[in-house]
Amino acid sequence: INTVYLANDAGTDWLGHVTLGQSGSLQNSQCTVSAAGSSASGSGTNLTLNLALTFQTAFSGARNIYMEVYDGADSGWQQKGTWTIP
Image 1: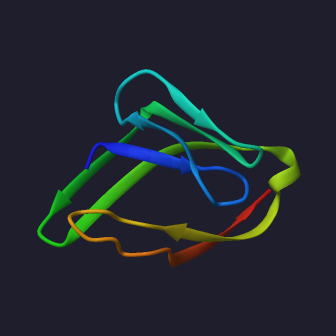
Image 2: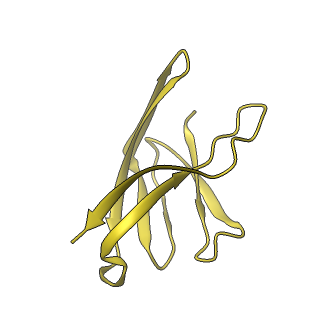
């Protein structure tokens, strides 16, 4: 629950992982995830994920949010929302 991976730009491999609440960050050409400012908590089948994200200027515009969860099984990539990056 406390580990986040970031996909490479092509979405074909992982760049690495960080433990939420610890030092460190992950970055690709689209965004940077800061582990220290991020957290996760779960209850039953619900997961709340707060990520400290900084987007690169070139990544502005309307974007889909995709997530993938592993917990003994693989959910596969699921679109979980949209947002507009200024």
